[in-house]
Image (cartoon, rainbow, N blue to C red):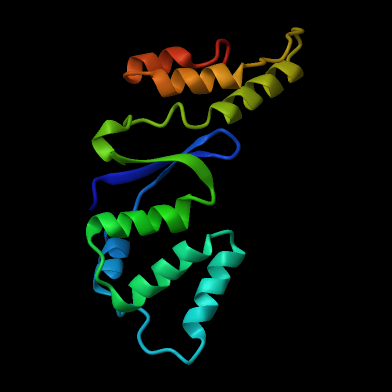
Length: 159
């Protein structure tokens, strides 16, 4: 299994991690995955991907590599990045899996805040909603040097 991960900031401000499979990297390296198809089938593959938001160049590179192969691991990762991640977010980085925190407690911060606010609204004790400064939190996450600093960023009052 590849040790590389593609990390990017989604348009809603959350962070996603794409884990390229060894199968995908091998298919982009060796090609021949789709075999012989009727005329126009490959063009429809590109059009279908573009309709889902993939840039035409990224869709074309993916289809071409699936047919002919010839990609190095780095080239395959770039194709996966451009096809599967670029239209979903920004600040895309290739990271080694060992550089990412092992647990996922921080990945759903917005959902945790929403759940805490719902619980507060339904409780008998009047409490105002939690209103995190997401811009400050996003910057603190970017600047965090280790897991301890990441955990210190978690909004107060959110379990």
